[in-house]
Image (cartoon, rainbow, N blue to C red):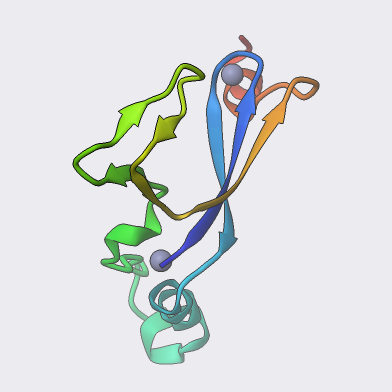
Length: 99
Ligand SMILES: [Zn+2]
Ligand SMILES: [Zn+2]
């Protein structure tokens, strides 16, 4: 399972950065070092691993949102290990699109 760091920007955009990649993704990346694999063009890149995308969901029947908007009384399953709020930097999306 890949792990991510989530950054929230002032513009309300959210970006995810890979924090730690899983074995599947590691093997997939390592194919670039294999001459036989490298000979195949274009090099397919498909780790076939659903947990390689950032996700966050709540399990538990009595889960509800608390007054602060955070989830209470449920178990949050996520592969986001850290959440950062960045009020100083421009987000990469806005920067790229000149917003
Ligand atoms: Zn992964
Ligand atoms: Zn933005």
